[in-house]
Amino acid sequence: MKHTYLRQVVNGIPVQNGVAQINSKNGKVLSFSNSFFTGEVPALKLTGLRIDPEEATSRYMKFLEAPASGCRNEVEPSLRYVATDDGSLTLAYRIVCDMNESDNWMESYVSAETGKVVSQIDYFHNADSAEATSGTYNVYTIPDIDPGLANNIPQIVSQPHANAYPAEASTLGWHDQGDGKTFNTTIGNNVYARE
Figure 1 (cartoon, rainbow, N blue to C red):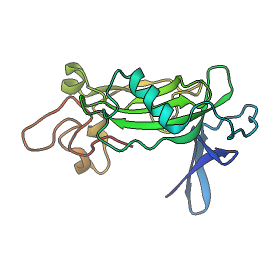
Figure 2: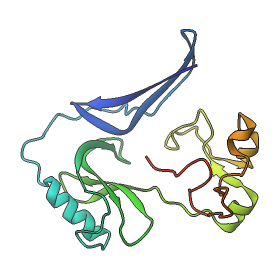
Figure 3: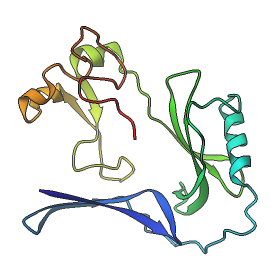
Figure 4: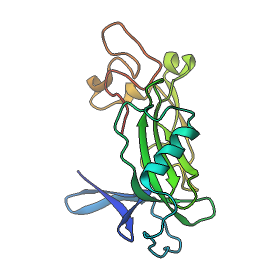
C-alpha cells in the first residue's frame, strides 16, 4: 500500500487545507480524496501588503489577549492562502503559537490586507469524562479527511482502539499511557496529537 499526499499551491503560495491523498497498491489507485480550492484564483499581490509579519504577530497576540512573548515556540509567520466563507482565497500569515499560560496550541491566520484573524485552529482538546470513560468519539472517519466538504458527516465511533490493527497497537485505549495515569487530553499510549 502506498499513500501519496499533495499540497495545493497557488501563485507559489500554499493553500491552507488544500491537500489531496492518493492511496494505491501495485500501481492501482484504491482511493482519492482532496480538499483543493476550486474557485477563481486571485492575482498575485505581494508588494504593498498593508500588514507585515511583525504587525500580523502583534495583532494576533492582542487578539488572544496574550503578551507578545506568550508563545513557547519562536513565532515565524509565513504566507498562506485561506479559503473564506464567500468562496474566495485571502492572503494571510500563518502563525503557530504554543501558548505559555495554557495547554492551547494555536494555528491561526491573520489577513495580510486587514490584520484580522480569518481562521483559527486550537489543536488542544479535552475529552469530557464520558468520552474518556466510554471511549466514544465524534469523528470524521477515513476516507472523509476534510470536515469542510459538504458530504462529510461526523460519525459516533465507540472504542475505536478495540478495532485497531494489529490488536496490540492500542491495548490500553486512547487515554492511558500504561503507567497508571490516564488523561482526558489528546495524550494517550499511542499519540501526543500535534501537527
